[in-house]
Amino acid sequence: MADLLLNTVQVISSKERIKAYVELLKLRLSFLVAFSSAFGYALGAVNFSWSVLGWLFLGGFLVSGASVTINQILEKDLDKLMKRTQKRPLPTNRISIQEATVFTVVVAVIGLGILALTTNWLTVALSILSLVLYSFVYTPLKKVGPIAVFVGAIPGALPPLLGWVAATGHISTAALVIFGLQFIWQFPHFWAIAWVADEDYKKAGFKLLPAGGKKDLNTAFQIMIYTMVLIPLGVLPSQFGITGLYSAFVVTLCGALFFAQTFYLMKQCLVGEESSYKAARSIMFGSFLYLPVVQIALILDKV
Image (cartoon, rainbow, N blue to C red; front, side, top):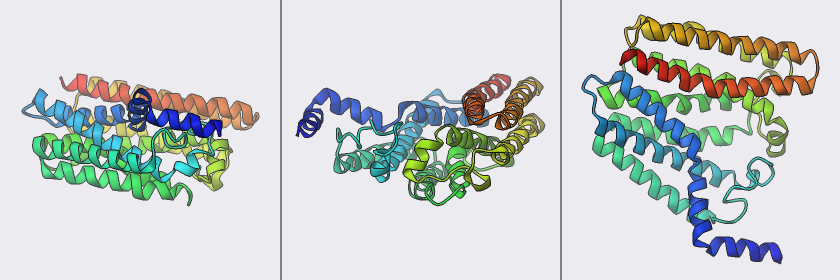
């Protein structure tokens, strides 16, 4: 009874309701998505416009916020099972499913409307594709198997492509290079998170780890392979004339350091589970650093 009363107070509190709605948007993740869109625009723009960049950032942020809110609506009961998600707005009943649904529709319509008015219809179409893939394909596939990581990597890599299309109006080979770099990055990123959160993920029935879903040498090897591919991919932007040699050096160095972390994970797999957990956690944080550092290096080199 006390818990029910507490939930009622939280729902009717204006301050808590506003805070809960903001939490639904997952500010950090949506900001990174918007930043990646802005990154793609900055690389592709010939006639750069701060106004278009600003609207693209806002539109991308809102569409991402709508996507992650749909994810939370669909996974409300699963979020209750996991320690890392059980305090979210929906599991704690600070926001109802109906309220979250209305909020999602409003945010998505505003975000897509901004993109439609300030960019082009191809950008809008790709944004819708990203929302649908993340919310309605990737989300349910998380309980099916590691195929979810491949599907999730597509909307995860679309933001820079969206930015490029917003700047140019078309998809070029250079744009696909930028997309490919972020697409491959998703695999070690996803798998490192899945390794660290494995116990929580098992409670919800999520199956994201490769190689039979085990935290072992085989999975570590898979992470190493995809991280290794990032090294030659990092050189391609300079080869296609998107940027110059300075960023190629920085991106290659970042890729090599990221790659080196995977050997440490493989070594720690032979020591014990606790040691491998720390190594996987290191890769997870390394992946968080790799992408923005690489994106900033590429932008600065073009400028």
